[in-house]
Amino acid sequence: MATVSLKHIQKIYPHSDVKKRKKQKGQSEKKNNLKVTEAGVIAVDDFNLEIADKEFIVLVGPSGCGKSTTLRMVAGLEDITSGELVIDGKVVNDVAPKDRDIAMVFQSYALYPHKTVYENMAFSLRLKKLPKDEIDRKVREAAEILDITQYLDRKPKALSGGQRQRVAIGRAIVRNPKVFLMDEPLSNLDAKLRNQMRAEIIKLRQRIDTTFIYVTHDQTEAMTLGDRIVIMKDGVIQQTGTPQQVFNHPENLFVAGFIGMPQMNFFDAELVKNDGEYAVKLGPATVKLSEDKQRRLREKNVAPQTVTLGVRPENISLTEAEDGVSGAVDVSEMMGSEVHLHLNAEGKDTVIIVPTITLGENAGKFTPGSTLKFTFGGNVAHVFSKETERNLEF
Image (cartoon, rainbow, N blue to C red; front, side, top):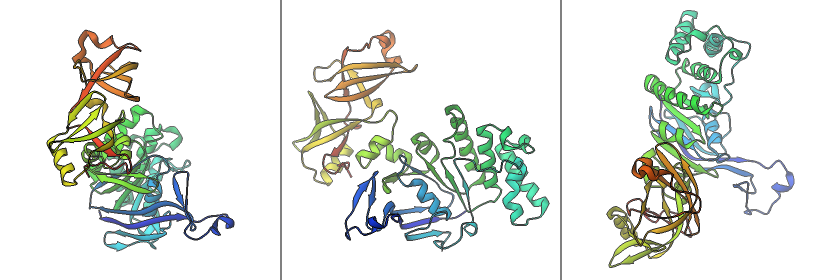
């Protein structure tokens, strides 16, 4: 168990092409969403994070955002270009991976195909030359936690994907590491098995009680597993907070669109101010913002302006009021307990989630081309700057 501190961590991959190194000093460009400078491609830039003892941190973001590179720097599999990595009070930038007292679970399982489950799990302990009875105890304890005792004599090829991943996790558990690193461990599993393994990881975390750093591109995993979530884009942290914080209070347009499924709806709207009260105007609708949003906007003295308005699909409700926003239905998806309505409203593709219990017999009436009106509350409206894409409340 340990604290982990990442201070101004940067990772630059140097140019392999000599000509690229001769670019004019200070010149930079964007390529594949990453910043390219004279020194090379910046994969992770000024990454700062304090991880508490026994905390479960999830790094989440789209492919290529630098989350796996960050994890590999913690593991010692990638060199740190600049910055300081501290584990349990000790700077470990130049410490070999084997001496960092961390364990890592890879996406590809990385099991020895010629060894049994028992031998795979015992391998690192044998390298440490621990007594045989201690090795046997640790392996069997880990196998019992993961419910794979019955597979100890099998080889990986005789196991399913979920069972192999349990073995990979078990191999890490037996080492009793200070820090547990997991790099997209569930991405190779089917949807049903992913759900099961997510629950298993939550149970595992409660039993082994160590510090976890978990990487995923799946926001559902991030929301269900993490004590805190670190959302990354193009090598830069966009927001850090609890799952509820980043869901309810996204700090910018990227976080708002990335967290939530289906993703947040965005509209071109006007932020107006009448008699000191803020409201958003979308088409014929003018919605007064909630008191807490009013307070934050007043504290920052935000001026009336054209904004990007964000509203989550589940926060939109149907209405027959004259000032409701009109939309034409493109697709209606019956999801059992919900109907997902895809429509065109105010020139934007919009998704509305409507509980079928509120529709009754009208649940199937939304046919392509039909029109409807909707509204939303001032407590669920998010206003983003057109220029900076920042949430104007923060």
